[in-house]
Length: 282
Image (cartoon, rainbow, N blue to C red; front, side, top):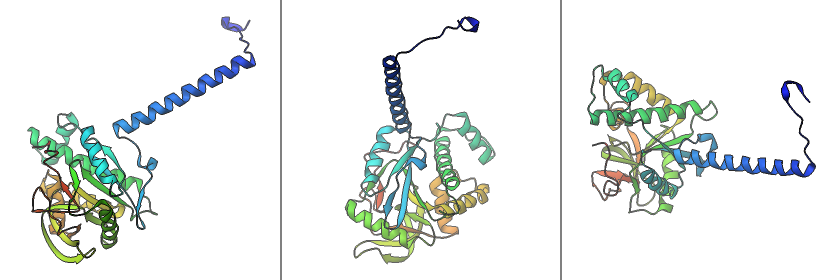
């Protein structure tokens, strides 16, 4: 008899093996559950992702999405062109955090649902970029990451295999700037060049934030630009991107001669498929 009323228990070797086997099975079940849970809520850390190589470049991406069916479709579209992505869920526009952040940014309440939704969208983009910059280190300043909304589709004038080649060539063209669009709305362009015999790229500014990429060092500079221009009180992310291209430097757009089937004023390898997925902001 041990102190405090404890008693010893003797295990046979057979019982011990059975206990160990049961513990191992339980461990596997717990790990399987955790993996499924992480995949479901989209909070996998990027260190767990196997990056897809485009030529000599490693690229991955983030999709801002609140709906699993929209994210799953977008993930499938991007996988076809060699991009591995994870989901980031923006904060609800009804949350206290979004309301307080918007009020702080504009200096006065703007608590109608439209303003709160577009501000939640901008917050999610900024948070994803900040996460990217934190992950990068001095050895990977030119690592690419793409940022997507959850309504993208591949331009029907090219195949997925062509898109992979065009993306690899486009990243080489944009390497010096570290900033690139895969699609843009209402572009104003210059310095057009051929990526292949049929598809062009050009330096542009325009609206839309559905498909763009940044290298880590360029992401840090863009975030600093956002901080420096806070006084403009622009709550739409696509307008902040437009203003950067217009006032700082035009950004390379891949596929400037590829028109969207939804709107001929929209161009690029990827377009917003508003027929399949209408906007959830307006």
